[in-house]
Image (cartoon, rainbow, N blue to C red; front, side, top):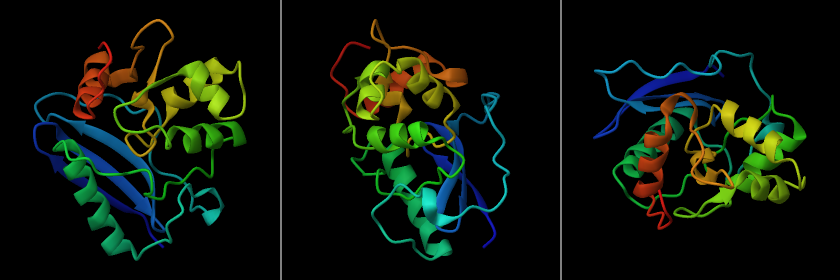
Length: 182
């Protein structure tokens, strides 16, 4: 099945981009204001077709057109501040290492409004002491929001958020109702 690339508008956030293939999200660029230059992505969304082995979801795959529309509606609701769950949306992790796939699965269980440190994420993924590797996973993730790396903080503070910046990370955490210091 061919990939579908969709640009969507999230009111108050800007324009985001979603790439879906075979009923799974393979790429997501966070919304960015149109007037500003978007951050430079860490990877390109084009890649060869993928198998179903690396899907992180308990839901069955849905028909592509309905799936794309459903995911866009979920994203728009999320950025509007609604308490929607994105942790069941199937995502493609075929090109990730087993540890990075474990990080993604663990991170998708962290509830909205809560955070973990990179060290805690590594431990949840089965590799205590691999905080730097967990950080590498978050830094290169192309599945923003679906694999909520913004919920991972440094041991001594908020930590970075790549080319989007700490302000964007703060805004996402505030949107989710994080009660800790920002």
